[in-house]
Image (cartoon, rainbow, N blue to C red):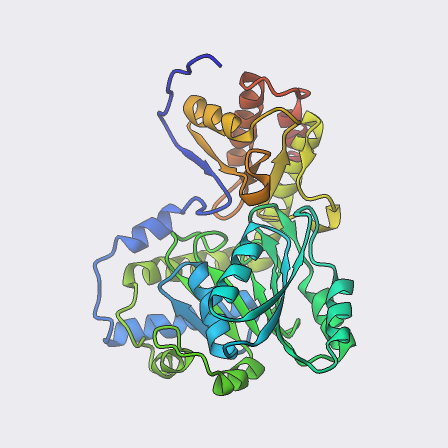
Length: 391
């Protein structure tokens, strides 16, 4: 491969599936001077943030905020509702689903892991079968990732909830929405999810550093029975302080300033419009990939993600080499393949503060990169996307 001259000037296109591009309004909000996190202005902001987060999650129950990544929210969900040695049913349909399983094991939970091919989502039939077989109700929770960041596969929480109900099983239902929240319709209450997990750096258009647990009454009751030792992750002190608009620790004030502004932006646009925008940009991306003659990592069109698309390269071609060319020549970062698909796929993030012209530039960079990398493909993918976006 010839040595490439670096052309990293102008705007850097951050097209990984998170952290996503941050709006100027959010960046400016985060640059505000700090305020007293025990004062009345902070309390008013906190209450407003929590109320608007409920609207985004479509939840009536408490939303808890942690100064942590999504990994922290995984751990908080587990240690507040379960006890050491409890059995959980977990579906490993991608890299982050596998990481959640690993967190559960390291905490001392008994994980029954259902492995997948990383091209399909959770099969509700498998959920029903596993729970029906568990006549003694030893399984205490079902863990599922809504949109798997590593693959671009979106599962169906409503269908999984119906499967749990058909089995007549009392297991808690936990759903990771890190890559789906504020890009895809999500209904915590309607789907009777017990703990929803999410984080700030994707659809919420913020930098990494905040994560969330949204909890049902059933989850709160389970928390009263939990035998896990916990301090920082304990829900109860946070819930108590939140009633007054505060936190039991020094909060990440600048991140909360940014979240406050991001929630304003989402609700100004309207959640239905946010979902529609993401769906159209995702469909345009897939049309480009199909026109190039490449395969999408998600094999089932009904499970295509609004936030990220994984692209499979032909055998003998390295996705990381393509990514390096695109970065060096066009100042654009694409997501790498993780775990089982490392080097086999690259990922295009099309989420957050993102529009049609940004997507057109992104796809142009990919198409030029494919040619420079010597990947066999058909030209014209960008034109197919533009045709769709302009219709």
